[in-house]
Image (cartoon, rainbow, N blue to C red; front, top):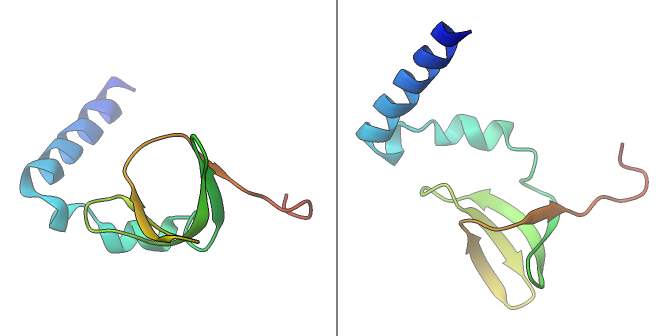
Amino acid sequence: MVEVAEEWATEVLAMMSEGPEEWGLDEYRLACPTIGRDITWEPDGSGHVIDVNTDGTLAVQTEDGRVALAAGAVHEVRSTDHP
């Protein structure tokens, strides 16, 4: 288990040192279940996730325009028919 953690940490640190273009953004976009979803965030935000920006923030379309969420408590809004 320690070996797996060390290998993972080594790979993450290597990617981080090379900059955002090496972070696998395209792969993350494909795997990100939040893109295309309605979300809410603290304290009173809500919107529709349209993308992941190159800096890793979520691109969210709100009633007032597009915002980038870097951190915070994001909660997916799920319909009653969603598992």
